[in-house]
Amino acid sequence: MKNIKLLATALFATVLFVSCSSDDDATPEIVNEEEIITTLTVTLLPTNGDTPVVLQTRDLDGDGPNAPVVTVSGNLTAGLSYNGSIVLLNETVDPAENITEEVEEEAEEHQFFFTTGGDLDVTTSYSNFDENGDELGTEFALTANTASTGTLTFTLRHEPVKPTTSLTDAGGETDIAATFTLTVE
Image (cartoon, rainbow, N blue to C red; front, side, top):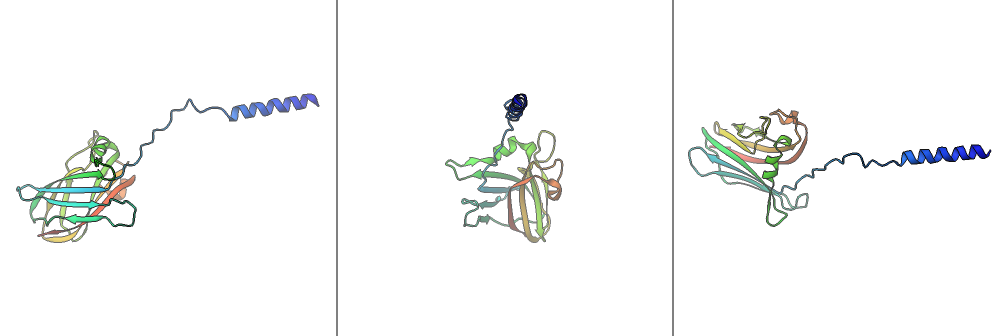
């Protein structure tokens, strides 16, 4: 009986020792926290030198009760091409943090998508790419084709499936999406 108790105690101690083994040898997974993006500004610089069209959405309280403030500085001109650039800011800190720099540094993990809605007749193409030659989209070209009105949505995806130009097939998570109502005259 003593031998059974001794054997049971030894077995229990062995199981306890094995189950409490340390995982300190494993490399901890690096957590890349999502950045706060309060402001998205799109500047559309006409290739003819006219005044730029600026699109902006600001949401300083995030998921708070206040809706984002969306502004569009003017209309697009039919038949004209524009060089577009996107700036992302976190304005919850002072001075504001430029998130665009981080997105461009982590280009393999990000991509902007441009989606039209309504009757808006514009085309877009990517002007900057990641190290693998896949689209990034913080810089792009836009052509205003014919007189029309509709929406243009800018969506930044984190860890999309690359290469793809389709938001539907991109996967990943949306860091920010902003929709602007535009008119092409």
